Image (cartoon, rainbow, N blue to C red):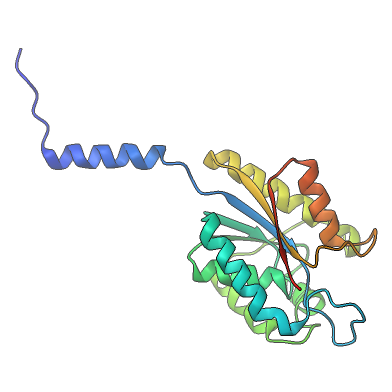
Amino acid sequence: MSDVLVPRRQFLFSAAGFWFLHKAAGPILVQAGRRIDAPNATVARFPAVNIDLVRGRIQKYFEAAKPDFLVSSAASGTDLLCLEVAGELKINRVVLLPTDPKIFRNSSVVDRPGNWGEMFDRLLKEVNAEILDVPKGQTGYLETNVRLLERAQTMANSYNTDARALVVWDKKVRGPDDVTGHFLAQARLRKMPITEISTL
């Protein structure tokens, strides 16, 4: 019986392909958090003066966690900061919106001070946002939380990795209508690993 000789280049290619197919994917991050404070806010939850500080904390976490994907909505404040940092670090971004982008931009982006509108417009040129079929108002925002978490878990299953929740906020639930608090509670119900980054 004669030996079969495999060219070295072909062998290396096959070995590299095998490694790539079996390489574990990075985690899927799903994020929610505080919007930037309104000018007349009586309680500081995410003051504009902390934007650069919070951006640095987000970047440090992303560099350590090394996620493959970030799943988020795109409201002013922590959503857009996370999405912008993810783009700079070449992290894949999945954006889910509860309403049409024009409506969302008016109600949840440019109603707060800052250049959030420009960031939102730039994001939509880079990422195809998905518009969810959810009710209007508070109920829709809560349902969006659930959809974000479900999408991250589905993606994690598909990529054979884990889904992790990132909550960027002041670490205080403001009441039963707190959308960020609801997101955190839902992540806990799913026993998802959670990281909290302070906005203060």
